[in-house]
Length: 75
Image 1 (cartoon, rainbow, N blue to C red):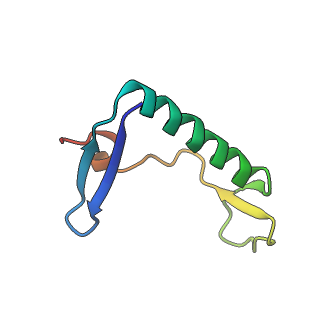
Image 2 (spheres, rainbow, N blue to C red):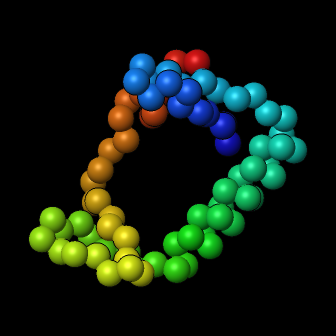
């Protein structure tokens, strides 16, 4: 796992934050724990612009691809 941060959204500057293997493992475990905690409280619904989400729902956007600056950071 690599840790990256967007430090200037306007310029889309992405920086790699160097970590050792132990910290990487701890961060990965914590991020997965938080993701699971968050998603366990919601039902996932495929995006439909006509649909109004309930408080316990989140949209999923099938086929959405992250922007290149996130998928291929240069730093």
